[in-house]
Image (cartoon, rainbow over all chains, first blue to last red; front, side):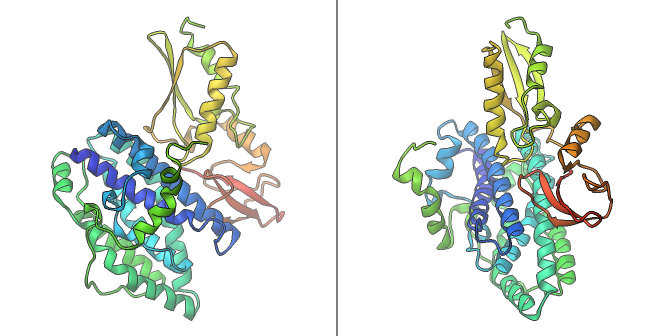
Length: 248
Length: 150
């Protein structure tokens, strides 16, 4: 498995899994407009994932984009753990998305300068959409944090609960380092200060306090996941597993 | 049509309507990026508006049908991502068509397509399709769609 293939797959996996989580909101949104918003975000994320999977499939030459999405097991997925966490209540979804959107925004901004033309093109495309997602999650976070006592308390709790999953976003492993040195990949560690700025500014506006750094979960990029991913895949992959090659 | 006349292809493509906004064509929307003729084959490059836009599949099918109906079989449709699609590619005429259709065209100031009032308010960042947001006019009180600038 080439490093570039693996690197591309990681990006695709994080988009796909977060997209699947967003699609779970379809028909369950708190208001009609928000239902449409969350489903639209799901579509963007699936589209982004598809672009990266198609490129990964091209690099690999063995599995198609669909096979990569629907016929791999839990341990073969390399997404960040934060995107696989259950949606919980609406405020919790907003917190989780906000933390990841801020990262994606900075990540794609850098990847847009990649020496790999395909990754750079996909990053520039994704960046336009992710900017919009970040605006959506930031606005809601401010509205909920600076809302009622109850909404503030709920999102503050979600913030504390999700915090242990942010450490992984800024990690560098041997694949990241190899591609960074080749001028293809992104220096995740260097994204942290920009991320801190976005998060601190938004939390201040939202009247929320930044949690203390404590234990940080890790392993998503190595195929280690929370117990939630297996259930997500079971639902997402059911059709292709039960009726292989089914088409409509 | 084996002679490599790409102008003719552009003309035909300009008759293929956007599946969701039928008053403008796929060319006017800026989805068709390039038509070239290489080794007896027309290469039609298209770019998605939004990554996950479900209309991309329909664009591809509609373009295929249109060309085949006009007796053209020697073509390939290629998906390109760079440069990323932008509403800046839309001409004034295209924007005017959108406005007449009841969709506020992409611009810095969101103007009500019905009464031209600049007093408008955002209802939702997202609308019925990925490319639109929902607004309402505080002048005539009508809700309307706004084609987002990206």
